[in-house]
Image (cartoon, rainbow, N blue to C red; front, side, top):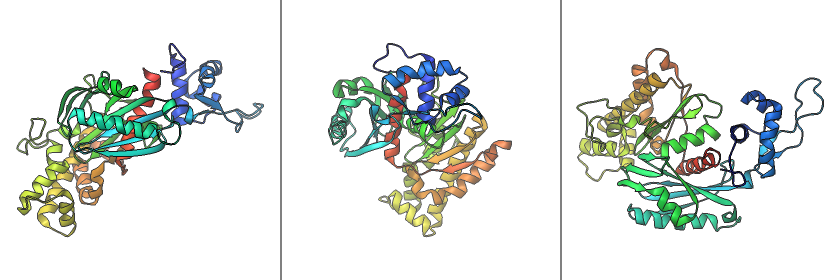
Amino acid sequence: MFPEADAVAPAVTAVFTAVLTGGPISRVSLARRLGLSSAAVTKAARPLIEMGYLEELAATEHTGPGAGRPASPLAIRADREFFVGVKITGDELIGVLCDLRAQVRTAAHRRLTETSVEHVLTELVELVDDLLDGPGDYRSRTRRLGLAVSGDVDHSTGLVRYSPFLHWRDVPLRERAEKLTGLTVTVENDVKALTTAEHWFGEGVGADSFALVTVGAGIGCGLVVGGRLVSGSHGVAGEIGHIGIDVNGPACHCGSNGCVEAIAGTDAIVAQARAATGRPALTFDDAVTLARAGDAGIGAVFARAGDAIGSGIAAVANLVGPARIVVSGEGLAAYDLFEPHIRAGFQRQAFGAAADCPLSIRPLPFEEWARGAATVSIKALVTV
């Protein structure tokens, strides 16, 4: 929470969040949007201005015909505070340093030679130091670090219960990272972190409901319903990669069979492509090249994967009814091979008007996932 405040009143939180995600905005517009009186907005904004989180811009708009002097919009002072965000993958740490508007000021990568917790934490500390000690005097204005990890993450405690690609179970990541870095740490599932960034600063701004589906090593989904990220009562929600669509399908690392991820995840596609070609050293890029060259067997692998993803997306549309669905992830490099089959699977399985939900494609590099981790730490500034 704000360092100068012992408690953050709901109106202060509401005003700050509205300006952060939709500003610059006048007090009159804020009052209308939040259902508050103009006096309440002014009272809530005053400490934020005094603490340097908000500023008044030069008057640019009138509050209405004959309303007198023009209003002075409120805006975020982006350089008031900085936030580190790190996306942890199985072979690399991707780090960014963002300002209060989640704009990336600098980025850095560190390769991982193994995924043991000790090795990852050692490299994490060095990465954070690289980001904070570069040009810009960021360390003195940085208190928070966000970490994005695949798998089952308890955001409230910072415990990584299970991360299949890191081979972690019950890792108290927040506790350990805070001791080593001296920063206040938030830990979130990587897809939820990316969804938070899209909700606050990307495709989901202003949307009451939307879904973000990620295609890659895993098949993930983040959900926003009623303007709020769906976290689930046990910290697990939106796991469309583990919707079973074929009881006789391949085994999944979760212990089930025929999950979307067991058919359409990157490793699953590679395994199926190797079986189809008899080439045990075949890579994902090799499979993409063969499919684009017209190899029927490999093409069928991508077709099956796309159909599985489309069926999973349809399940989201049927259950939640989002206003729009965004598809992203590193797997989009091969999206031309997936797309017709994703759309066909979606149309076949979507019920009634759910089939009208628009699907938009948004390629996002891993730096954006790290930005998602930073956004979660920005969000924690006012929601702790």
